[in-house]
Length: 302
View: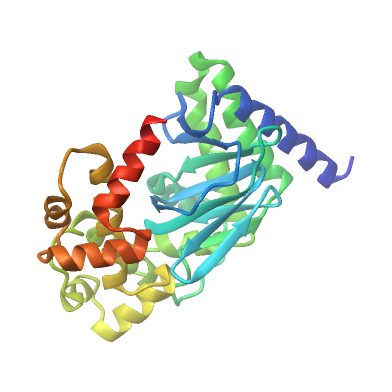
Protein backbone atom coordinates (compact mmCIF):
# COMPACT_ATOMS: atom_id res chain seq x y z
CA UNK A 1 0.00 0.00 0.00
CA UNK A 2 1.37 3.44 -0.92
CA UNK A 3 2.32 5.86 1.83
CA UNK A 4 -0.19 8.50 0.68
CA UNK A 5 -2.98 5.90 0.93
CA UNK A 6 -1.92 5.10 4.49
CA UNK A 7 -1.85 8.80 5.33
CA UNK A 8 -5.34 9.33 3.91
CA UNK A 9 -6.71 6.49 6.04
CA UNK A 10 -4.97 7.88 9.13
CA UNK A 11 -6.40 11.37 8.56
CA UNK A 12 -9.86 9.87 8.10
CA UNK A 13 -9.57 8.04 11.42
CA UNK A 14 -8.18 11.18 13.04
CA UNK A 15 -11.21 13.19 11.86
CA UNK A 16 -13.57 10.54 13.21
CA UNK A 17 -11.93 10.52 16.63
CA UNK A 18 -11.92 14.32 16.90
CA UNK A 19 -15.61 14.33 15.97
CA UNK A 20 -16.34 11.73 18.64
CA UNK A 21 -14.71 13.77 21.39
CA UNK A 22 -16.07 17.22 20.44
CA UNK A 23 -19.74 17.93 21.02
CA UNK A 24 -19.74 21.31 19.29
CA UNK A 25 -17.61 24.16 18.03
CA UNK A 26 -14.74 25.47 20.13
CA UNK A 27 -11.64 24.25 21.92
CA UNK A 28 -12.10 21.02 23.87
CA UNK A 29 -9.59 19.94 26.54
CA UNK A 30 -9.09 16.20 26.91
CA UNK A 31 -8.05 13.74 29.61
CA UNK A 32 -4.51 14.00 28.20
CA UNK A 33 -3.24 17.17 29.87
CA UNK A 34 -1.31 18.61 26.91
CA UNK A 35 -3.91 17.68 24.30
CA UNK A 36 -6.85 19.77 23.03
CA UNK A 37 -9.24 19.20 20.13
CA UNK A 38 -10.58 22.06 17.98
CA UNK A 39 -13.74 22.12 15.90
CA UNK A 40 -15.56 24.74 13.81
CA UNK A 41 -18.60 24.24 11.61
CA UNK A 42 -18.15 27.45 9.63
CA UNK A 43 -15.37 29.90 8.68
CA UNK A 44 -14.79 32.51 11.36
CA UNK A 45 -13.51 36.05 11.67
CA UNK A 46 -9.89 36.68 12.61
CA UNK A 47 -9.33 35.80 16.26
CA UNK A 48 -6.22 37.10 18.08
CA UNK A 49 -4.67 34.60 20.47
CA UNK A 50 -1.32 33.67 21.99
CA UNK A 51 0.21 30.34 21.01
CA UNK A 52 2.27 28.54 23.61
CA UNK A 53 4.86 26.23 22.06
CA UNK A 54 2.56 23.74 20.32
CA UNK A 55 1.94 21.36 17.44
CA UNK A 56 -1.26 21.71 15.38
CA UNK A 57 -2.31 18.76 13.20
CA UNK A 58 -5.38 19.27 11.03
CA UNK A 59 -7.61 16.38 10.03
CA UNK A 60 -10.14 18.40 8.02
CA UNK A 61 -10.57 21.97 6.76
CA UNK A 62 -8.02 24.76 6.47
CA UNK A 63 -6.84 27.72 8.53
CA UNK A 64 -4.79 30.90 8.19
CA UNK A 65 -2.50 31.95 11.05
CA UNK A 66 -1.02 35.45 10.86
CA UNK A 67 2.21 36.35 12.64
CA UNK A 68 3.18 39.98 12.21
CA UNK A 69 2.81 40.59 8.48
CA UNK A 70 3.19 36.92 7.50
CA UNK A 71 0.40 34.43 6.82
CA UNK A 72 0.71 30.67 7.28
CA UNK A 73 -2.06 28.65 5.60
CA UNK A 74 -2.31 24.98 6.50
CA UNK A 75 -4.59 22.00 5.95
CA UNK A 76 -4.26 18.21 6.39
CA UNK A 77 -1.28 18.15 4.02
CA UNK A 78 0.96 19.89 6.56
CA UNK A 79 1.17 20.71 10.25
CA UNK A 80 1.96 23.91 12.13
CA UNK A 81 4.55 24.28 14.89
CA UNK A 82 5.09 27.18 17.29
CA UNK A 83 8.46 26.82 18.99
CA UNK A 84 8.06 29.86 21.29
CA UNK A 85 5.21 31.90 22.79
CA UNK A 86 3.75 33.98 19.95
CA UNK A 87 0.81 36.40 19.64
CA UNK A 88 -0.96 35.47 16.40
CA UNK A 89 -4.29 35.91 14.63
CA UNK A 90 -6.14 32.76 13.56
CA UNK A 91 -8.85 32.44 10.92
CA UNK A 92 -10.66 29.24 9.93
CA UNK A 93 -10.98 29.34 6.15
CA UNK A 94 -12.68 26.08 5.20
CA UNK A 95 -15.44 24.54 7.33
CA UNK A 96 -19.06 23.47 6.97
CA UNK A 97 -21.56 21.70 9.20
CA UNK A 98 -21.13 18.57 7.06
CA UNK A 99 -17.30 18.81 6.94
CA UNK A 100 -16.19 20.86 9.94
CA UNK A 101 -12.70 22.13 10.59
CA UNK A 102 -11.08 19.54 12.88
CA UNK A 103 -7.68 19.97 14.49
CA UNK A 104 -5.46 18.46 17.19
CA UNK A 105 -3.38 20.85 19.29
CA UNK A 106 -0.60 19.40 21.44
CA UNK A 107 1.23 21.71 23.83
CA UNK A 108 4.94 20.98 23.55
CA UNK A 109 6.83 19.85 26.64
CA UNK A 110 10.16 21.59 26.04
CA UNK A 111 11.88 19.69 28.85
CA UNK A 112 11.06 16.38 27.17
CA UNK A 113 12.27 17.72 23.82
CA UNK A 114 15.53 18.87 25.41
CA UNK A 115 15.99 15.37 26.84
CA UNK A 116 15.32 13.82 23.41
CA UNK A 117 18.00 16.03 21.89
CA UNK A 118 20.55 14.25 24.05
CA UNK A 119 19.48 10.89 22.57
CA UNK A 120 18.62 11.73 18.94
CA UNK A 121 21.33 11.77 16.30
CA UNK A 122 20.66 15.20 14.84
CA UNK A 123 22.94 17.54 12.90
CA UNK A 124 23.62 20.92 14.54
CA UNK A 125 21.02 23.56 13.64
CA UNK A 126 21.74 26.80 11.81
CA UNK A 127 23.34 29.45 14.01
CA UNK A 128 21.11 32.44 13.20
CA UNK A 129 17.62 32.40 14.76
CA UNK A 130 14.68 31.86 12.41
CA UNK A 131 10.89 32.15 12.66
CA UNK A 132 9.32 30.59 15.73
CA UNK A 133 6.30 29.56 13.64
CA UNK A 134 6.59 27.19 10.69
CA UNK A 135 4.88 24.56 8.55
CA UNK A 136 6.06 21.03 7.80
CA UNK A 137 4.70 18.52 5.30
CA UNK A 138 2.51 15.90 6.97
CA UNK A 139 3.87 12.34 7.02
CA UNK A 140 2.31 8.96 7.67
CA UNK A 141 4.66 8.43 10.63
CA UNK A 142 3.52 11.67 12.28
CA UNK A 143 -0.17 10.94 11.60
CA UNK A 144 0.19 7.47 13.11
CA UNK A 145 1.97 8.84 16.19
CA UNK A 146 -0.79 11.42 16.77
CA UNK A 147 -3.41 8.70 16.31
CA UNK A 148 -1.76 6.54 18.97
CA UNK A 149 -2.18 9.39 21.43
CA UNK A 150 -5.82 10.02 20.50
CA UNK A 151 -6.70 6.33 20.74
CA UNK A 152 -5.84 6.49 24.44
CA UNK A 153 -8.95 8.64 24.96
CA UNK A 154 -10.92 5.39 24.49
CA UNK A 155 -9.12 3.80 27.45
CA UNK A 156 -8.75 6.47 30.16
CA UNK A 157 -7.17 3.95 32.53
CA UNK A 158 -4.15 3.74 30.18
CA UNK A 159 -3.52 7.47 29.85
CA UNK A 160 -1.28 7.96 32.88
CA UNK A 161 1.08 5.18 31.83
CA UNK A 162 1.00 5.42 28.03
CA UNK A 163 0.30 9.07 27.14
CA UNK A 164 3.85 10.22 28.05
CA UNK A 165 5.25 7.52 25.74
CA UNK A 166 2.92 8.52 22.89
CA UNK A 167 3.77 12.20 23.36
CA UNK A 168 7.47 11.36 23.40
CA UNK A 169 7.16 9.64 20.01
CA UNK A 170 5.36 12.68 18.54
CA UNK A 171 8.08 15.02 19.82
CA UNK A 172 10.78 12.74 18.45
CA UNK A 173 9.12 12.68 15.02
CA UNK A 174 8.85 16.45 15.22
CA UNK A 175 12.58 16.79 15.82
CA UNK A 176 13.38 14.34 13.01
CA UNK A 177 11.15 16.10 10.48
CA UNK A 178 12.50 18.21 7.65
CA UNK A 179 12.03 21.43 9.64
CA UNK A 180 12.83 19.93 13.05
CA UNK A 181 16.10 21.87 13.24
CA UNK A 182 14.03 25.00 13.93
CA UNK A 183 12.82 23.53 17.21
CA UNK A 184 16.28 22.12 17.93
CA UNK A 185 17.67 25.64 17.52
CA UNK A 186 15.42 27.04 20.26
CA UNK A 187 16.66 24.47 22.77
CA UNK A 188 20.38 24.45 22.05
CA UNK A 189 22.20 25.70 25.15
CA UNK A 190 23.79 29.16 24.82
CA UNK A 191 22.51 29.61 21.25
CA UNK A 192 21.19 33.00 20.14
CA UNK A 193 17.78 31.43 19.52
CA UNK A 194 17.70 30.01 23.07
CA UNK A 195 18.52 33.45 24.49
CA UNK A 196 15.74 35.03 22.42
CA UNK A 197 13.32 32.34 23.64
CA UNK A 198 14.17 33.20 27.25
CA UNK A 199 13.67 36.90 26.53
CA UNK A 200 10.28 36.14 24.98
CA UNK A 201 9.28 34.23 28.11
CA UNK A 202 10.36 37.17 30.28
CA UNK A 203 8.38 39.72 28.25
CA UNK A 204 5.30 37.47 28.32
CA UNK A 205 5.51 37.27 32.12
CA UNK A 206 6.16 41.00 32.62
CA UNK A 207 4.17 42.49 29.72
CA UNK A 208 2.36 45.04 31.95
CA UNK A 209 5.65 46.56 33.11
CA UNK A 210 7.57 49.29 31.26
CA UNK A 211 9.89 47.70 28.73
CA UNK A 212 13.41 48.94 28.07
CA UNK A 213 14.83 46.93 25.19
CA UNK A 214 18.34 47.65 26.47
CA UNK A 215 17.56 45.88 29.77
CA UNK A 216 16.11 42.77 28.08
CA UNK A 217 19.01 42.70 25.61
CA UNK A 218 21.40 42.80 28.54
CA UNK A 219 19.61 39.80 30.12
CA UNK A 220 20.06 37.98 26.79
CA UNK A 221 23.76 38.94 26.72
CA UNK A 222 23.32 40.75 23.41
CA UNK A 223 23.78 44.27 22.19
CA UNK A 224 20.45 46.12 21.73
CA UNK A 225 20.85 46.13 17.92
CA UNK A 226 21.67 42.41 17.76
CA UNK A 227 18.85 41.56 20.16
CA UNK A 228 16.34 43.58 18.12
CA UNK A 229 17.44 41.88 14.88
CA UNK A 230 17.27 38.33 16.27
CA UNK A 231 14.02 38.97 18.17
CA UNK A 232 12.35 40.11 14.95
CA UNK A 233 13.76 37.09 13.10
CA UNK A 234 11.94 34.79 15.53
CA UNK A 235 8.69 36.71 16.14
CA UNK A 236 8.28 38.83 12.95
CA UNK A 237 7.87 41.89 15.20
CA UNK A 238 9.91 44.16 17.45
CA UNK A 239 10.02 43.62 21.25
CA UNK A 240 7.72 46.63 21.77
CA UNK A 241 5.24 45.38 19.15
CA UNK A 242 5.28 41.96 20.83
CA UNK A 243 4.58 43.53 24.23
CA UNK A 244 1.76 45.64 22.76
CA UNK A 245 0.01 42.60 21.28
CA UNK A 246 0.23 40.75 24.60
CA UNK A 247 -1.18 43.77 26.44
CA UNK A 248 -4.10 44.23 24.08
CA UNK A 249 -5.01 40.54 23.97
CA UNK A 250 -5.00 40.39 27.79
CA UNK A 251 -7.11 43.55 27.85
CA UNK A 252 -9.68 41.93 25.60
CA UNK A 253 -9.77 38.84 27.82
CA UNK A 254 -10.34 41.02 30.90
CA UNK A 255 -13.12 42.98 29.22
CA UNK A 256 -14.96 39.75 28.46
CA UNK A 257 -14.33 37.89 31.73
CA UNK A 258 -14.52 40.66 34.36
CA UNK A 259 -16.81 43.62 35.05
CA UNK A 260 -14.19 46.33 34.57
CA UNK A 261 -14.36 49.59 32.65
CA UNK A 262 -11.99 50.24 29.78
CA UNK A 263 -9.79 52.71 31.68
CA UNK A 264 -9.22 50.23 34.52
CA UNK A 265 -8.41 47.43 32.08
CA UNK A 266 -5.99 49.65 30.19
CA UNK A 267 -4.18 50.56 33.38
CA UNK A 268 -4.04 46.94 34.51
CA UNK A 269 -2.29 45.81 31.32
CA UNK A 270 0.25 48.64 31.50
CA UNK A 271 -1.22 51.69 29.78
CA UNK A 272 -0.89 55.01 31.61
CA UNK A 273 -2.93 56.91 29.02
CA UNK A 274 -6.58 55.82 28.51
CA UNK A 275 -6.66 57.56 25.12
CA UNK A 276 -3.55 55.70 23.93
CA UNK A 277 -5.08 52.42 25.13
CA UNK A 278 -8.36 53.10 23.30
CA UNK A 279 -6.54 54.16 20.15
CA UNK A 280 -4.26 51.09 20.01
CA UNK A 281 -7.11 48.74 20.99
CA UNK A 282 -9.28 50.13 18.17
CA UNK A 283 -6.42 49.75 15.70
CA UNK A 284 -5.96 46.07 16.61
CA UNK A 285 -9.57 44.93 17.08
CA UNK A 286 -11.39 47.37 14.79
CA UNK A 287 -13.55 48.99 17.47
CA UNK A 288 -13.08 50.85 20.80
CA UNK A 289 -12.76 48.71 23.96
CA UNK A 290 -16.19 49.57 25.41
CA UNK A 291 -17.96 48.80 22.13
CA UNK A 292 -15.97 45.62 21.61
CA UNK A 293 -16.72 44.51 25.18
CA UNK A 294 -20.48 44.80 24.58
CA UNK A 295 -20.19 42.87 21.32
CA UNK A 296 -18.14 40.11 22.94
CA UNK A 297 -20.57 39.77 25.84
CA UNK A 298 -23.57 39.58 23.51
CA UNK A 299 -21.78 36.92 21.49
CA UNK A 300 -20.99 34.94 24.64
CA UNK A 301 -24.68 34.91 25.60
CA UNK A 302 -25.91 33.61 22.23
